[in-house]
Image (tube, helix red, strand yellow):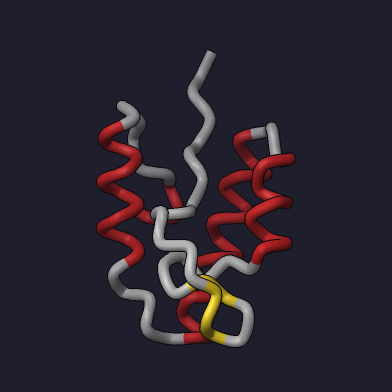
Length: 83
């Protein structure tokens, strides 16, 4: 069985940008929602949405390298949306 993509959270968790985390750009509701996503395609879709959200909000260039490092640490290949 394939491993699930890890959470986009990079363990910063400071909600200062209009309710968005300064580390990953997720809101508290989005963090809670990600935990309920079980299917890989749903998690990949969420990551695609999150990347667009980060681009719209700006100041999240640090997230991609941190998330790729998290995936590598868990022994996962990078998700296609980051390739």
